Length: 131
Image 1 (cartoon, one colour):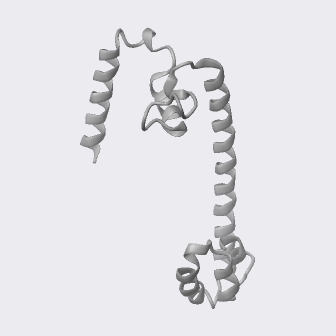
Image 2 (image 1 turned 180 degrees about the vertical axis):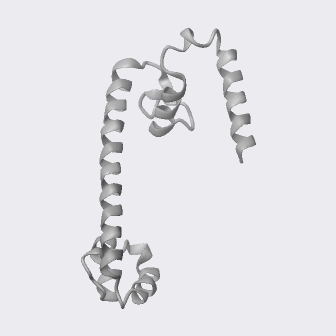
């Protein structure tokens, strides 16, 4: 829908048809407000922002693929395995974050599992203080 606005589309029905199924009704109202269209400058800026967004999504995909490759080679911890052996609440994204935060050679950083748990409690306390 945003790319259509960049191209100069102003027809609310056409714009609303580009919305996801569950958002179509809400988007018809929003698209009707765009009847006058965007200025040339607004379309340019929106187009630039959308290009950056797409570049970031591609970069995120590349980074995720690299992390996946590393996890498959380096880890045997069950939390990172298939869904039948994974720890409850640990999905692929959470596993990536855990590895990013603590690494895979935990014995080099944490003397015991109690030290790791203590670090986790400290970190969660820091997060609460920032809010």
